[in-house]
Amino acid sequence: MARERHSTLIRDPDTPMRATPVELFYDLVFVFILARLAESLVSKLTPLGAYETLLLLLAVWWVWSYTNLATDTLDSRRPAVQLVIITIMLGSLLMSTSLPEAFNGRALLFASTYVGIHLFRSTTLAVILRGHRLRNRPLRGIFWFSLSGVLWFGGVYVSGSLRMVLWTAALALEYLGPVLRWPTPRIGRSPAWEWNTAGQHLAERYRQFIIIALGETVIITARTVRGTEYGPVQALAVLISFLTTVLLWWIYFYRAREKLGSAITGSADPGRETKWAGYAHLIMVAGVVLVSVGDELIIRHPAEDTPGGWVAVLVGGPVLFLAGRILLGHEVFVRVAGPWPIGIAVLVLMAPAMVLLPPLAVAATVMVVLLGVVVAAALTLREPSGTPGAV
Image (cartoon, rainbow, N blue to C red; front, side, top):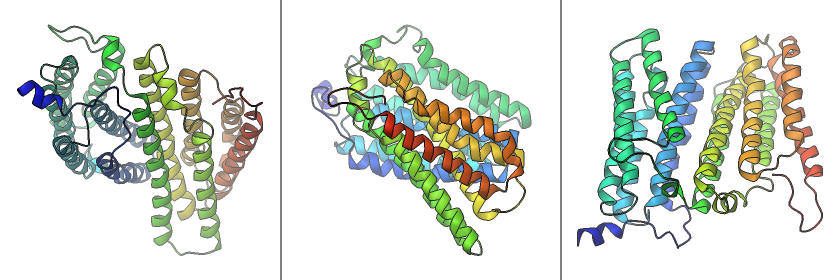
């Protein structure tokens, strides 16, 4: 009886599954989380601040990504599963309140909510999947997140560089897990079939997260303008920020918007494609966070001198986004549009000279390069009917 009761919460693998309203509701937290990460980086625009923000982004992405895999396994139309997702949403919201001060006064709040989310999700899955062939997957999660949890909580009770070392080690351990296939005492490594995910569902979730990330740049732009003396220069900065976001949207969605799911599902190794798709989207999201920071810089300081760190942000955001899109095209779709790596090369080569320009001019130059990439890619990707193009 218990086995039958639990089985009703598991998604039927033979039934196509789209993202459900509760998953979209859960994603709303991450609009705020990405804004908090951008806020944290703006306030600490130094190599150390950038590294701290990177660590936090890696942690945040792991929360979203593993929750996404859980909803890929479970039927999120069921009230019990929805309650699990909403509980994780609450934990994510609490975690988000600690982000800018995670390396200072709110380390305990961040570590406890982060580790708690992972252990709660894995434990709940282990209970729901009792008697199911996928039950070992959350058991591995309990083991690995318990190991990394020791490092997370160890970092809470030290400070400075030692906390950063311990938290870096915790994330390295968590990201090493998929590479090693989560070897766990008594149950061994994860076999490939455990990660034969629902490609269309995962693809839709990735697309939605990119939309959330790009939408966060619009929110940052509007919020920043509200706090400045609005004038012609700010209006131009808003226009450049908005057009840059539109160009990034085009680079991600053009032609590939409906192909990601079939590429994962049709692969000989769906688990591998899922892993690389996740890494590619993580790089693109990191790029969008930098773009958000750059938007705030050009609106608040459009005509000031441009330090090297500001150039790194204004150029680095689009470069990372293009790099992630190239990785997605190469590993999942096999083919890559030629203008994208050329765009990266142009931006990197131009970067040293951009310290001579004011921030608004740097942003305008980057936007023009992206526009050139988009136009060139649109022309390159035109192919005869029936012939697959690069994506």
